[in-house]
Length: 91
Image 1 (spheres, rainbow, N blue to C red):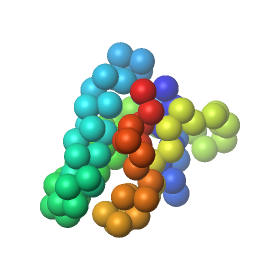
Image 2: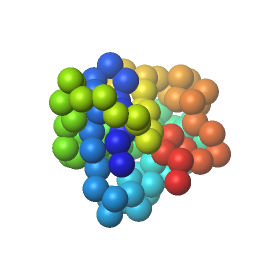
Image 3: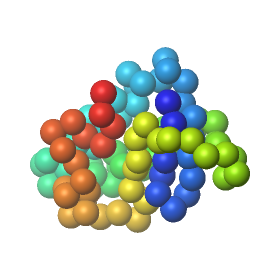
C-alpha cells in the first residue's frame, strides 16, 4: 500500500499493516467526530507517525497513492471536511 502525506512524500506500507493502519485511522475519525482537539492532535500525530514508519518512496519514483493524508499542520476544522464516514483511509 502506498500512502502519500501531502507536502512530504509517499510511504510504502506492507499489506499486513493495513488492519493496524485502519485502527489508527478509526481513532482519528472518533476524535474528529467528537470535536475533541486534544484527541485529534494525538490521533493525527499517531497516524502520520505510523505511515512514516513505512518505507519512504524515493521522490523520483512515481506511484499511484492508495491513500492521501493531509499535511501535518492540518486543523481539526480542516480534517472534519476531509473525513467521510470511513476515515481518511478507505478500507
